[in-house]
Picture 1 (cartoon, rainbow, N blue to C red):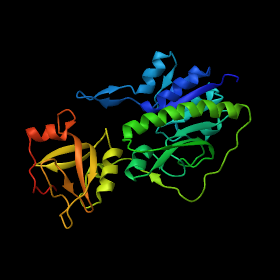
Picture 2 (picture 1 turned 45 degrees about the vertical axis):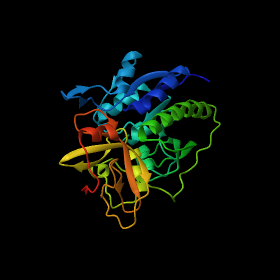
Picture 3 (picture 1 turned 90 degrees about the vertical axis):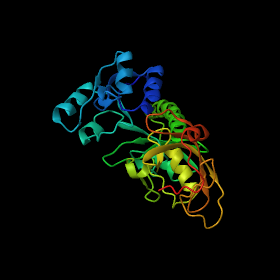
Picture 4 (picture 1 turned 90 degrees about the horizontal axis):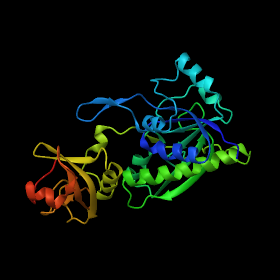
Length: 308
């Protein structure tokens, strides 16, 4: 395959395996686009994202515009004259001029089986919805939000994954798929499939309300919520004014007519609207993650406690 000159557009670590895979495959990076540095750590100092650091390590130029709609930013992109732009969790809207500039277009690596879970948080939302399968979609981008035609899809089972493990699995699959898909595109050996009208759902950004454990929901749903938000930002409940993150949990049975939020035993099994849930790993403010039994030795939550 003739090496392609490409622009890579991505912000979180999810994008890194695909960037590395394209270079390993012999393609030539012209520039990495990523969102601007953000405050991080206790000092809240601005830090580059992982893709900017990867670009520096590879001696590839990088840009961090706040928007691509500015005419100067658009012209800077057009001046690169890439064969293709590969987009992976970039987080900024691409204007029409950018979408149409590369010879092969702008190709997106999306962490769901489109049209399910269009939007910003497909990995977390798929687990939180108790989906059994998800996957990677390679998509030819258009002006809509994850609405472009599908070039390739690969389905994987979710199983007992939390968001962290599923993220890593999907990033690896996406890296493999983008190299294969571009090879087929360059050879003219690929068929674009319009997304079906039915089955579309939206993976909105996570909010503070998503993190709160509501005991008036079934235990199965809460266990999915815990996995979907682990390891970050973490689902939580409040005890004695302190927020306890739950990083893993197990579904348990519960006596009938037990009030939701009622602690059933000395292992922090909590009754839900249906069944119960037993946290196995928790994290208190300013503390490291630890087993629930270890946390309860320091701060017992006795049976009969009603959690809010």
